[in-house]
Length: 232
Image 1: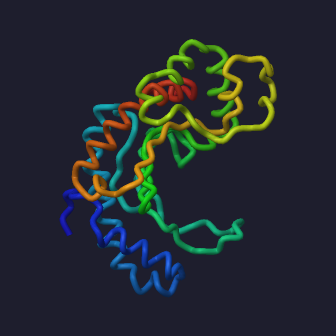
Image 2: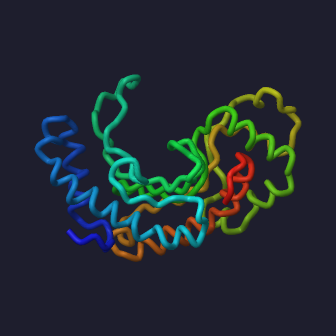
């Protein structure tokens, strides 16, 4: 297959349709080469195509096309503590995380590739308690800057605002009457666009679509990066 990104074609989506019907180790072993050809190869090509434009947004966020220990998420599920024992994820995904981050809980840009559920944008997902505390404290210390993020026209229009699951009660150490309490309760902070159809995803122009969306998310990414003391 070509190493130039030409879109996620029909065989990419068909692999995951078949996997949903056969999510077991025996089937995957028989189809592992198919997985490498129809999923790993185009995702790696996509990451390579994203890399130059991502550097224009920020040179501190990495697009690493390596199938292992790069930007691509592994297909293997961690089932140790889950009632759902399906061994494989039924979608592909990539995270372009800050070079200071070691795992998926670092600030980063994200692309989720699932038929009928294409998601991409930026933010931070369930950060560890120290990073989460820093983000919350920055919201308290810099309320005007946070207000500028959540009222940014691009973020409101493209993403419908900042999202992320939250606590039912104010977090410990924060006044219940603090401004932006709904945001202070959040355990994650992200701005994600959901694309219902796959038409653009099947073409090379998906790279431009993703990069333009990442650019819209930069006010949030700037704020998070400053909060956790990393460069944007």
